[in-house]
Length: 85
Length: 403
Image (cartoon, rainbow over all chains, first blue to last red; front, top):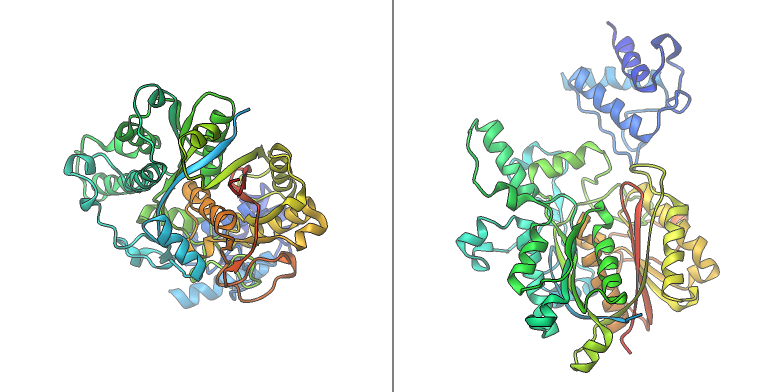
């Protein structure tokens, strides 16, 4: 499965949605994912890809890891895999 | 209803091993937060904390005691010995039966859990020390205080995360206020600075890697501390009759639940609790000169707390001072309200307001006078101490200068 499909699988599970209803343009807010859901999604991503995501809930925009849309998360994970492998 | 005096105080925390050392550090705006010195720290992403250094338990406790006392119990007993010595009370006969112990604590014996899980899971051992259970139970500290000082009245442990100590002290106040006890030993303690304890907090992604900067625009999370704060609460006339030195008077409290979110704070819940404490203590907003903030240094808490204070105090919010001493001693979780009550006593008794250190950039959402970086002299008659816990459980105490 591609990185994008794996990230979508994680996020759709968190949002209790069908993966087909989650697109790269979706924002977490639109999908109904709150702050706890976000932290759980990031944990699931770290476990799935064996990477460490630099995310602090107090300053979400402080790192390069952009959580604004599903697509930006996929791009962030792709970058982390490249850097941390 | 009975009035309630504080006639003894004790502490051990990252700022000092007793009350005078702690208050001196608060006056000087000293930071007790630094690199953690614990086993496996290299496997942690968060490597700072308000750790108690230079404390050798073997000089304070014998071998038998050490086999029963987790670090949170050790801290509690050290602080309780100081507080009870200061009060000058000795407990026997009727007074013993009318004196209880209500303490706050959140994690129990985390170090004991950590060490023994490591032993059975990592080292593969199939046998643990026989006292693991009595050592790690949350009420161990309260029980050992009752045993060491012969306190036979109502005694238990309150666990409401970051509000545990405030709930405990409110309960102790109520016991004396309502006539169920003459004296209560109260406050709280915590010791979560072990590998498993910090690792669990890391998971929530609310911890700072560099400093606790409450109310500062560039704040980036909380920093854990450890230690204990213990007080002797005494029925006012009982204290007066024996000529005791009264450190401050506890004049009211409020407790409430947000009933909304397991981690996010609520502006309405916080405001309702502060308002409730004012009503219980029969105060007008203008009477309050200082608030020791919950002030965790997280994005969510600090702006919510400032908004709640503005809601309750209206124009007076701009006249009062509100600081977070967590910037210096870290967040002691179940013991934090107890150590922070020391700052309230210092405000009403000594006229010194402890600062919020690490303050670097103004945040328009935290626009109150947070006493940035330097302590201040001020004439304060009434102080409040806020605690708003995970789980939405809130407790606010009100203190007045002894008269």
